[in-house]
Length: 55
Image 1 (cartoon, rainbow, N blue to C red):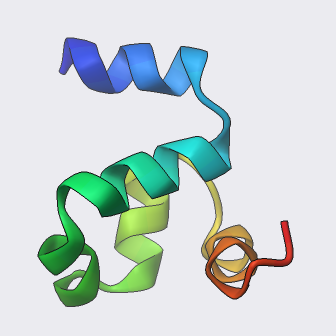
Image 2 (cartoon, rainbow, N blue to C red; image 1 turned 120 degrees about the horizontal axis):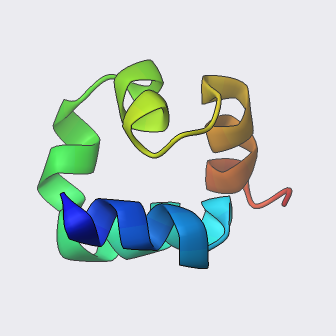
């Protein structure tokens, strides 16, 4: 829990997504996008942009 809070305050949204994806790639594939976005504290639309490389 403390690591999650640390990441929320020290990393950008894009960095949080890439860090999470690097450490848990199979989890990212299994969980719905809107749930993962909520956990990482941004919108599903923003996550789509990150995945598409538009950010």
